[in-house]
Image 1: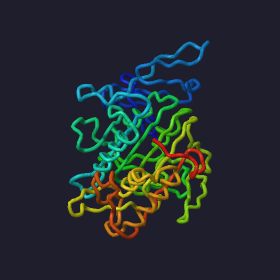
Image 2: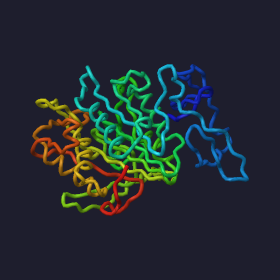
Image 3: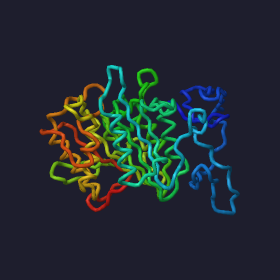
Image 4: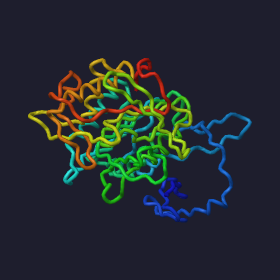
Amino acid sequence: MSMLVDCSNCRTPLQLPAGARAIRCALCQAITRVADPRSLPPPLPTQPYATYSNHHYAPPQPHPPPAAPAPSPYNRVASFGQPPPVNGRKRAVICGISYKRTKHELKGCINDAKCMKYLLINKFKFPESSILMLTEEETDPYRIPTKHNIRMAMFWLMQGCQPGDSLVFHFSGHGSQQRNYTGDEIDGYDETLCPLDFETQGMIVDDEINATMVKPLPHGVRLHAIIDACHSGTMLDLPFLCRMDRTGRYTWEDHSPQSGIFKGTNGGEVISFSGCDDDQSSADTSSLSKVTSTGAMTFSFIQAIERGHGTTYGDMLTSMRNTIRKNESDLGGGGGAGGGAVSSLIGMLLTGGSLGGGGIRQEPQLTASEPFDVYTKRFTL
């Protein structure tokens, strides 16, 4: 099993293959050597006092303050333009992948990303400079949604978060599954996100997503994930899934692995909306008439908010499911690793357009780091 190590020169996170003792950094070409873990001293206690990259750690005295945190890996690419600076207490990573000119092409994922950015800025007052967009339309090569860049974006999102922060991770594209051999999945499969270069570089497994964005999340920080992809029900490997029937009654299923592997946070709160259950596919369709494709899940998520149906998390989930059930006629099966798309314009999203008629065989899911009453907990980003 691979592990993440920091480059000894530029501190970029690197994935060390199992059994390897050295790895070369693709950014600075430095070679990082790793000692036998049995010879290493025990790790120091985790310091949950990180602030944003322009501050130092500030643990309580009498302990001496440790060194300033390593800068974001994105700061190493100044020649291609800086990433959005941390601005205020809200930050987001938005990723939309269309896989153009491949057999896996999707029609609405980049539009999903644009719609989500519009929603965060205009409805939830996220500063535009604190939103990192990764799509194939970006001119900066470090914002193309490759496996490496998505990984770095997840690290950027988590860097120096502090109590009161609101973080958002949105992904629209292909999702898939692969056999799990560690015993930490109830159904025996890991869920995966498919970056633009997944055919050559591989997929991003839910274990890594959990280790990067869930486990380190400190007390007082909230992360929302919105995943519009196939097999996305437990894409963040969160320990609790809200199993809701069509009458609105629900129970929280404990998905904590029997192996005892911890899947929760470091005190923070993570809530994830996903396009379908782990064994389901999200829909995909071409543009209809004069409108533009967007993801079915992203459409229903934004529409629930714009129509005032997003007061609580239970209201959000119910509204999303009702919207998708009514709109099968414009949708085809996801197929393969598929992600979702359904016809609309952002103007329709903001003024209450419809998708068509019928019902689609995908059920949006809600997972969380801790169970809560979905009909009393107010939804906000």
